[in-house]
Image 1 (cartoon, rainbow, N blue to C red):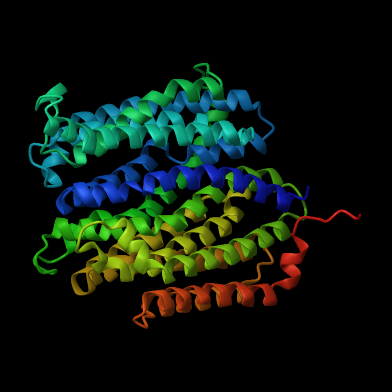
Image 2 (image 1 turned 90 degrees about the vertical axis):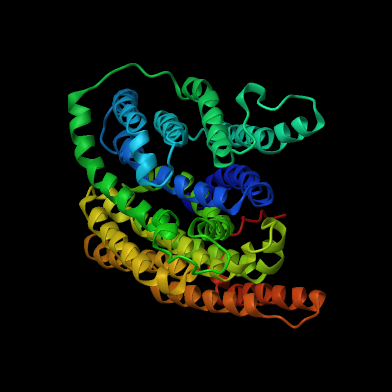
Length: 501
């Protein structure tokens, strides 16, 4: 099997778990928009943006560092695992305790008076995530995709179970008189609280299993291993912080930047709930990117020593763009019924028009991930900091300038703009330090063309629902046909080989 096909196969395995698991999780938007208030959904959007940001601090680039030092430094992988996990456990205890103690201050600062317990639960969620990061990375490095995938899916199923139990199950049983009000301290006025508790329970329950399957670590801090790893990971920490600023700050800052009464009948936090719900629809693109990342990161490092690796990286990038542009068009042209299916209360559909822009933003994030391989395999991670810092600054500027003017679209533009800038900078410096023969002109054309027809399909409306559906989806078929014609040789080269009769 060729390296290209091997990566495709591993991506399919990780993709199955990621898409299956997150699709189940994605369905929770139906529950949240049907049973929780827009204010609760706004709190959910804001707090989980904070969790995404702090998760980078808690893991500080150690996953990528673990891959690098376990594959390309002639070190004992077991020692690398023991040292990395030991370091993360120590740092997690320090950071988790600090955040737990600062929860009352954080609650007041973020305008959640008296709800400091939300941020104590957040500290525990972050701690559980951090101590699972390296064991999950080890499973990926050892190609234990089925164990990795099974653990992730089980974690999501537990999360869904607790969400349904606490948000729907208990209130229903109370209404029937099966259990009394206040059963086990249950409160009917809680919303985002039960989302956090569900996450906390689900993460805590899988720790023993994942640690066991990855191999129990021995507490060990080898100075000769930790010191160079730390030097390698620190730029990745700042890259991660800047990167998560790009990805999450539009959701976190939205309610604080949006002027009062910008949207009639909605508070800023309720508008943030609408923005966050529509942001969730773009997660369908992120599922593919996450699946690709799970498979590609260890794969890229293992191929780094091969003299033909630049050509392989270029082929992977081209295939990634072809697949993801098709996905973007397919989602965008069908947003009318996708929105009706998942956004269960009136008002949420007002933000649907930003979804194609968000899909392109996530697609560019995937392109950046492909481009970023040059500084990872050449140990020049210092460039990652400056590139992502530029994206972070642009993100914040656009949020503060354009959200007060354009509302939802201002937030969406911050996402697409920053990833576009990061791609340009990463490509520019990468071609100077580690040239890769990307099909740049073709890739740019497909990105631009797919983005245009995505919006054309989104706004297409001929009145008749059946005819509308057929016309919209004919756009997807037409795009696929064009790709098949334009990329005939590329596609033919990577179809499964046919055995002679």
